[in-house]
Image 1 (cartoon, rainbow, N blue to C red):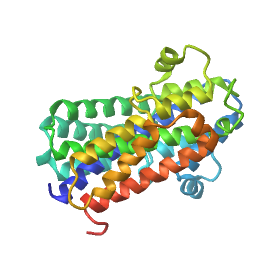
Image 2: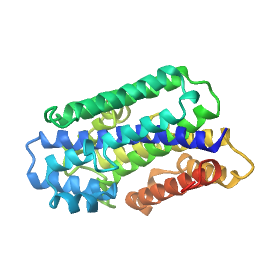
Image 3: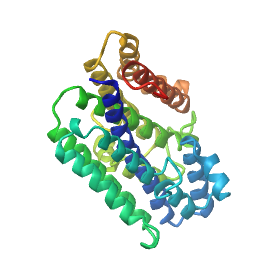
Length: 314
């Protein structure tokens, strides 16, 4: 496959998954804003999340102090912020348009309609966008796009590159959501009770994991059990181990003569999770482990770009 085609497919899927990840993060904080918590709790949680996303500086330059409504708008429908949900949907559509011949007509129509509808909903003068409804719509469109791609695409290199992009981005999103709660994951603070069970239940709901958690653990929500599920439960589709497994499998499927080290690193990341134990991770520190995992994902993404995709500036 031509590297330019692979590049567009990879980034198309990353941007769709990134839009969903942002929608889930905003949804978690939006639900928190509806609870009778103190304003400081919500603001601090939003600030922590924007730090993990590395967007706090850009937000502060334009808006100053962290204000929930301003932060929600910045992360969802800001046309000038390249990392907003709206910008991600636009970028996904532009990448798809560049390789329409490699997509099924159903997938192209789904992506194109998503962007056109998002643009119409957020046009100036169309009225204020309800944050809760918008992020739910984004999640639904992401589910639809993924379902159409799985249900209609040929299992060839085009499909594999979309999966690599999807699971690299999903793993990063799950890790960053958990990183934002790292103050509850310090050694000694995660064994028995939760400082704020509502915040952790909202986190689980934002990952479509609340019912799954109840089915697996059958007890109160504790940070250690949430971390165990999000890190090491292969059967949970948004867990770090599931994302690492999918990345490794699909990178192997597109391996070429120069990608041996990339395949090895993808396999090593998966093996570290597959054969790891929660006791070992907590001994090191869950926050430290997550930092290392996010760094490994970034390195793997750079290596995929170097081995298969269009060089920067080409």
